[in-house]
Length: 213
Ligand code: SF4
Image 1 (cartoon, rainbow, N blue to C red):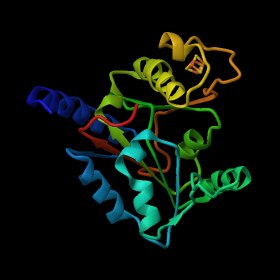
Image 2 (image 1 turned 45 degrees about the vertical axis):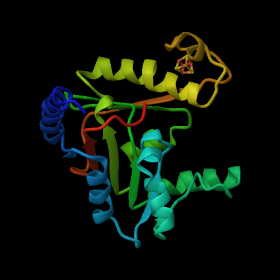
Image 3 (image 1 turned 30 degrees about the vertical axis):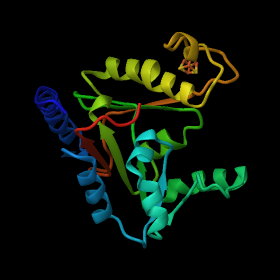
Image 4 (image 1 turned 90 degrees about the horizontal axis):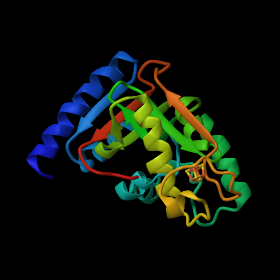
């Protein structure tokens, strides 16, 4: 990464850290993804149940594979052997997990998290349920304010996800959200979290690398 980009990210992530701390979150900054992964594995153990939300960032970090390989107590919703019923059951059980991991669709420097799901399993478990939440966040998810975070969520993250899943929605043709009525729509539940309760439940792991959509 160029020095100018790295410095620019450090300035803005530093402001975000201050603002998220004021809002009761527990934020961290890591220059490299391997440092964030080590932090996470140093803070969980095999006695804990661990749930997760669908995420390109988690795929890039290969965290789910490592949790499987090392025998952690994973509520493995994406396991290839799952039936639809098993997957739905695991997603409900995730609300009682000790640990939940996911990414976000956007975060603002002002200290808000915005995410959007079809089922709501990821965005709702981020706000309520699991005892501890770890969110892995590449610098590309960081924007100035709440309006920009909502815009990013709908017009970048959701559109990229619709393209990823080969959906027949207007956004995959025109490259922006038009709040469609398509049967293939992937957007249903959007959440804004702007205060962490209980304090420090949500840990934000900012990483100075581009990750996810
Ligand atoms: S509401 Fe429809 S058009 Fe908008 S991002 Fe979702 S699927 Fe695409």
